[in-house]
Structures are given as structure tokens and as C-alpha cells.
Length: 210
Image 1: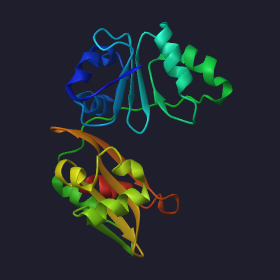
Image 2: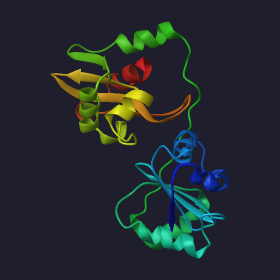
Image 3: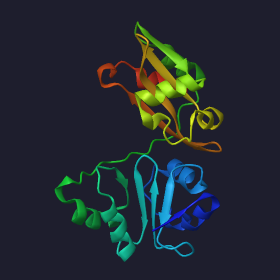
Image 4: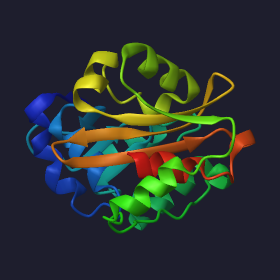
């Protein structure tokens, strides 16, 4: 497989047109050349492509020899986003360890700013909402959950092109919502809450703030 960089990745765009719904933000980021890594079986006329952000996207013809090479290279526990035509090959390699999850695409967020503000401010006692505004904040958010900032090259990249909100409890970040990737005005959102602090409206608050 050949790794593509920058604008070279555009050659793989057509392979991802049939990808499952709800992933256009991540795909746009990967194909832009600014996020993740992308490999193809041929630099000019690829039949198979593999995009890696914090999970993998498989695209192209699963019947090709390159497809088998790609799947067998995925040897550790991972998440893979691929259409149903890839499932037989994935099951052949991973067997019963392969688990299938439903990915859901949501509609647009409500544009009622008063309602969103009320969600963002309705926190239980002891919790504090803060905007990620400095390198230390980015580092703390990444320490809480790497996926919230991990697709950016570093804190400078995140602060110039990304954005995020976090919630503190007793001085520790326990929830966050950030731009998982961003290409222009197209943003993929990541929201995470510490297991011990769930069901308290923290994800709703950070998502509303963002």
C-alpha cells in the first residue's frame, strides 16, 4: 500500500462516495490532507483505500487482493467503518471477535440560542463549564480523552483550527465536547463524559455550548 499526502489524497475521493452515512465530516478531513493518514493500492488509479483517524475507513473493492492485504494488516483491536460488502472479508479475518455497531446520523442542531444557553448553564452543583482557550487546556482535554484533540497535529493546530468546551469537577476535567476534525465550516464533533459522571446533563451542556 502507498501512503498519500496533502492534495495527492484527492485521487481516492471517488472510492469513499459509497461510504456509510454520517461520516462525511471525517472523510472530508481525511481527504483534505490535513488530518489522519491515507493509503491506497495504486497512486493514480486506486481500487482500495484505507483512511486512519482514530478509527479506520475502508473503501473500494473488497474482492481485490489489495483489500485482503489491508484487512489482514489490521491486527490489533480497532474500530472499522465500512459498508456491508466488506463484512465477509472482515469476518473471515476477525472471526467471532468482530462486533457490529449501528452508526446513527443526526440532523442539524436547533438554532434556538436561548434554549442552547439554558442547556449549557444547567449544571449540577460542583461542576464548571469552561472553554478550551490555551495550550494547557488542550493538554488537559487530551489527557482526559485523546480523541477530543488527537486528530490535530499539536495544541497550536487545535487552537487555530479547532475549538472545544470542557466541564471540571473538583479541579479535574470530567466531560468534553470538541471538533474531532474540521475542514472549513464542516466539523465532526466528539463528545465524551467520564463514566462516573454520566446521566447528569454534562454531554448536553458541552454540546450546547459548542
